[in-house]
Image (tube, rainbow, N blue to C red; front, side, top):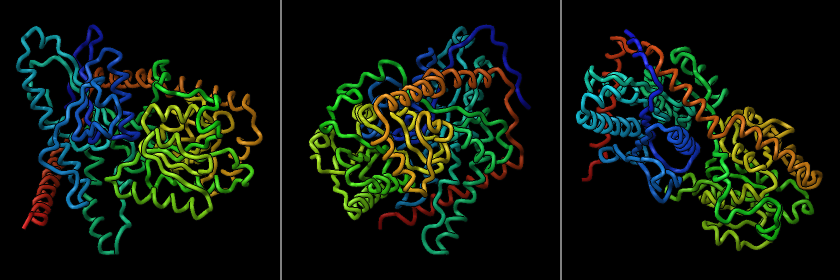
Length: 497
């Protein structure tokens, strides 16, 4: 039975608790940090709980004290078992994290006196990527542990980047392995939708993702709202140390830079940028360089392998390549290098690249949103992107960039040649200005903060949707038993002899 909202006579500062599995370097992590910064700047109390944060491989705000980050749920379960069971371990790690979180919150609340309890803040949990903890928070959350004297309300927002079941690779190995993986994934696929339905509200990063979520989960999640990721458009964000102004000729002797920024993953289709660049005539490539920069972790096998594959592709096409792991070595690359790979670029130097390049090449197909094109437009850099997914919502074809088919390398080469040879500085600056204006209107930190606060206020002021039914409890207990059995079996299998 839904509970009636408590009348609220005045706006109240919210207690915002983010739950994110791994604060590494990626679009999901950037979104969570930006959302946290937007809410914190508006006076809300913000805490981020995560199961993993490597200070040497995370964004600055996650390690420099700007945000309150707490690492929990990382002592009982590993991230994987022998390179397998990633989704099972992610679920168990998150449940471990939330158990500690709820216990911390309970101890803190016990110390509140009656006056403080009457003025208690509303608790808002924002969960993303792994929804396993949402039913736990909904069924056994802080309301019950604090007792019914608690005046602050509690709501749960789930941010869906993309359905996890569509990201899982099921076509690897022989037929028997694929069948086993399909059976292994089946309870998790069901559990994902059911767990998300426990949230008071589900939001997604684009209209494209919203449609996919509706196709996968039907109407069980209610009305899904779009909440776009953002970039910080404040003047402070533009003042990066060592940043070079566009067109001042200071980077690599004034070469025209074609830039690709992505993680080194095969699904990012970075080879498209290399093939399109190779399609230019030798005279058109003179005085230019393709710079491929992005997230790279030498512990991730795919990152290492894909970098080697891309390097081999460029070399086999007759392009000279080089790889740099530091800014200092990158700046000393000779002019003869056509393709430069930059591994794990620092934020300040990424801004330098964006502000000094001529064109951004964004190659992933069916990208859920894609924050890099927005960052490029904010820097006044036109974008050439694949005409599917998120870029259809961020880029205005012919005004802030171009949208082209991923299968037509010749079309990509044609746009690159047009930018390098047929467009003057005034035309490029005009396109860049339109891009900046679009980002400020739809994808700024302020715009995201407005939308996020609106969603939160709607949740707090509304009835909670019905969630649990008796048969679902039985199924949930059965699934939990299955997960525990699998964990025990994995532990016995990998027990040291």
